[in-house]
Image 1 (cartoon, rainbow, N blue to C red):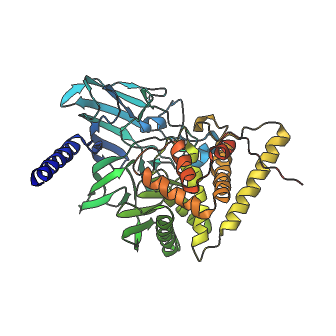
Image 2: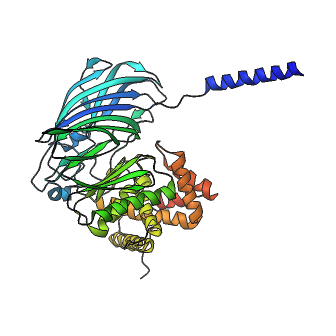
Image 3: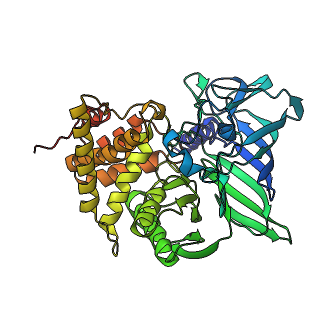
Length: 487
């Protein structure tokens, strides 16, 4: 009996050892080391070392990087600014970026600088060898760029500097190719995977800095300040500079900051950000980062989301500002932690962030908006929009188009934000509130730090509700659902 027991234990131990040896390793993250310095005349000089991990399932001989600053150059095929908003964006007259990629180095060896893409928007780096799935390679890029004087994601105004989408970031590899969409003016034309960042940012000493990640060290000199920043498992890195004042508080264990220069009620704006982190954490799942910052800045639209950082336009005040803060904070879950292709499937993050904003007002006190009012406003606006198009005998109400296929910002906004929020409300009415929230929790937990596809979102809702929801989603997404007034 004892010999049999020993034999059984030996076999069990061998099996455990075999399982341990054959267990797949955790996927390693690509890492970016960025050293950047901004001069008084708004020229950014930077070096980026990308330790790229091939997390695809195919060998790679080259890697493509987005060169988003080139979209702001004179003569760009696609401008980041909508044509009808040029004057708003350039209050001091047209201004352009000038990007100069000085050197590209692969594993310590210089290689050719090759700028390609539909709109000179891609840095194509030949590796000189093949890297297999799971392998990594170090790519260094030295460049400088003159910032444009523009109220947008990348540029400066009289009161702030926006450093967003400012460095070469690796393109996502899908379906046998790198996804290399240009910087369209409609929507948020970005698509990236989570990575780890070490950033050393030197700026004029008059500026305070809001940023993705956590500050590890700050040194302030007579002329410049140096910020050393670390960020892990984030989809992008961005920073905003200005002569800011700052208020801070806690949402659970998360430090929440609000940085501003003209807000007459900064404590209210801070409270809105804190309430948003708390409520969305309770509804969808805990916020995974230690710090989150909302920053007021010069920006054309209402706001813009980046990991651990949300821009809010200084044109917005009062309830409108609070609404932007809530929406952009919702993006910390939908886009930030759970990613998606924002060009191809914009509804996955924008519509869900907008409906999350509606849900916020169900659970928060002391705000002038309510869930019912937000929903009624959306329904009324969408019905009027559909009536206008019906009377004109035209109108595509599908939500499955890439952002560049919408006629303009208005059509995009009504389809993705307004109709998208109504779609999620219909899904919720079909499943019931408990199953709906359970589905969002499942979607969040199953897709953290990943890139989700529509089937992952729809599947999570179907599993939670135990209902077949694909036909309902598809009827909304394909444009078959139209709401017209009966009057």
